[in-house]
Amino acid sequence: MALGAGCGSFSQDLPPGPETHETETALKNGDVVDNGRMVYAYQQDFYRNQVLKGKTEITPELMLFFQDYFSKNGNELRLLPEFAFGQVPAWDDLSHYIIFNAQEDFVDGSISEGNFDRQVRRFFGPIRYTPQAGKGLIHENAKYTVRYGSDAHGWAIYELTGLKNKGKINQDLDRWEATIRGYFFNELDSDPTAEGCSNNGKAVWKEMKKEENKGLTYWQVQNNLILKDPGSVLELGCEWTIEFTVNDPEGDIYFTYLSCSKNPKEEPATRRIPSDMPPDIYLFKQYPSGYEFIRTVSGLRGEVEITNELREKFNLFARDYRWCYLPDLDGHESFFETGDGYANSLGYSNFADAVFYALSYLRFPEKVSEQTVQSTLAALFVAKDGVHRPMPHQAYFKIANYADGYYSPWPEGTPNYDRMFFLLTGLKVEEQESGEVYITVRAKQYYFEDPSYAPGENEKWLKEKANELGLSDLEAAAKLIAENKMDGIKGEKEYETTLVYMLKGTVPEDYAPRIVFSRSRSMEYDEPFDRLK
Image (cartoon, rainbow, N blue to C red; front, side):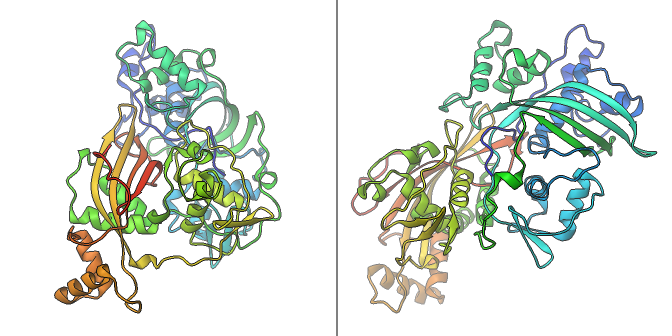
């Protein structure tokens, strides 16, 4: 379900309008909040000219309103399913859409029937449907639960090319029809240091070199194209024709969709996803500790002084995200290369390590589809070249079994993760002018065997500390990690990992951990890392 090229929300500066236009000042200032409640650029113009007067002329203000609305609601148009007026979207298309557009109502990967229905009515009106399971959702106990991992990468800019008022659908609401073109960008196109820039990203960087664009940011140049015939510079990704009604136009405005057609066409979800997908396919989810750590550090910048709170939260984050199996990588594309890891010693590419990590992240289910493994890795690891390539699926001796499109764990034991601890030793947060924020962490891994085993030096040390503190051994370990009191104890591995997220205005687009780089070393056998990168 990962979408390689599409729209995510992004931070933007609105471009000035043509000097000859009568609302030149408004265009320059960006009429974003007109009466304290309006939240989109030129929403007041849209309310006054379209909602009240029914005008359909395409003006710069109108184009920028649609651009701002669909940019800030990044999955609303780009994932809208095709369906005819008076019809209901296919169930799998409908449920897939709600998964991506109702994140605020999902708790631990689930949404209640009531909240699901509220979101359906918000986007599609009072349509009739039967609550049921689907290719993307399990339905049981009056709630829906996501079956597998999903992510929608990149972003788009939107060019309004046509608008019609088709009359009243009832006494209060007009039926509108809009034609909109979308131009897609890869995830890191705005980062001048990133590799694999898309053709549209390259076109924007080329535009930045022009004399009239000197001193402007990437986002300003990109958004200026909205009013300058973007199709003459950018590759068209998709054209939508949508019918919709307008709700709460003087406040937190939103659209309810009556129909949608696309060019080029997309296959409906019922044909995109194999019909023989078993009901017990394993769930992918982001663990709350990851969101919590990213949320905590999102407002920090530079080399950060590490507090007890940061150490405590990172320890939980690293444990939940199975840091002990985190593969060395430099972008998702490096999984297709070879290095000097365990998988390479068996003759495999780095992808074998990635498969094992996905299985551990998913808590080693008895059976998991190749689609779930691939979407899990795409959701967690950033492709620096902007493309999450299809992965080679096969059995990996001593790593993972594979048959008939499904992976299963190799029959070997795993450690007790509750006895594994991670000490945060370095933290650096850097915001790029383009809006990406990079979080680089340095951490050490420790493991304490169960007391039923003959104790080693680490276990003896922990028992002594636990007795001094009057705590159990695991409670003592958690306290000592948070307080950075691990001196004199032997660590197993050290990691340096960089995560990235995109700002939406001044806050993260979301707090999901997404990894772009990681390296590790044995603390016993390998040379120490140099300074934090």
